[in-house]
Image 1 (cartoon, rainbow, N blue to C red):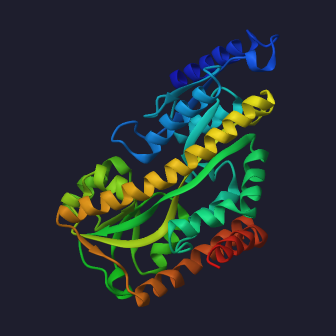
Image 2 (spheres, one colour):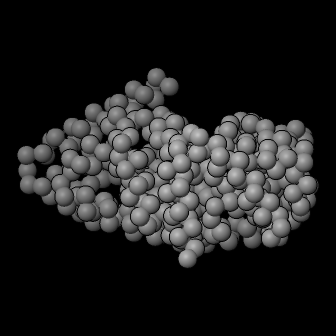
Image 3 (tube, rainbow, N blue to C red):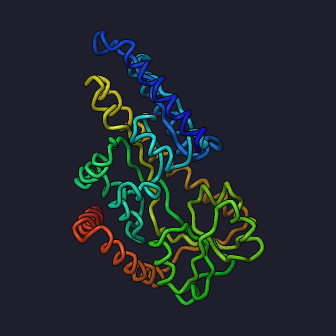
Length: 339
């Protein structure tokens, strides 16, 4: 951790020096080197990794090379918590990550742990692109971050060793979850037995029957080869998996207006690219999982209704933690997106 922190601080010093070196010149003569850090893998041609490459390409092209982007994935600058802290402090320019590790810094983001909210990703995108986006930006702003991109790209789905056709099939199901009280409450409400477990231990746990099930997006199910140790994939679509990209607020606000426009325009273009790419990749990965012999199950209306009913327990918990006003605004945006 100490080594990662020192490297992060060094990057911050190098970045500051690169800005100050040309600060006296005309606005568009300034040069910036921005680090874009993520804790997820850079390999495998995933939408998240490809989107970071697209952002680098767009920003450097639109700025004629005056803004350079250095990408650090694979937890090179630390895990999710470390890189977010580094961005807040100004040691790292930009971070790319999901909302889950950000809840400890921005409690209101717990609303994104509410299950069964969006029928599809198009609805999710519409809900998060309207007036609610302004509220999101305010939350990040108070944490010292400038929200640049916020895109729903996957769903968390359920894989199991046994068929799930009715709500009673969840009874006693040992399902691996993250150590997230909201996720655990959802599965408990269905009668399952949520079991937090280190992800690195999950494949063996599924293989040996220590747990019966797990929940993750197609990308992770495929990359981790869970199809070798799970027979069923249930398209629960229970939680939208969202990618956010944030920049240190002070850094962003101190940039020339022309550069802010370049970054904003590049992020908007990258967001469109990411969303469409993710939809295509989701279809491809689902087809690949089907070819392995996994049984793909789409819950019928009755089961989906039970899943939504179970989500009420999580909503109740989140209301207690972040307040009715935050949850009501979030739910209102989701309702309006389907009209």
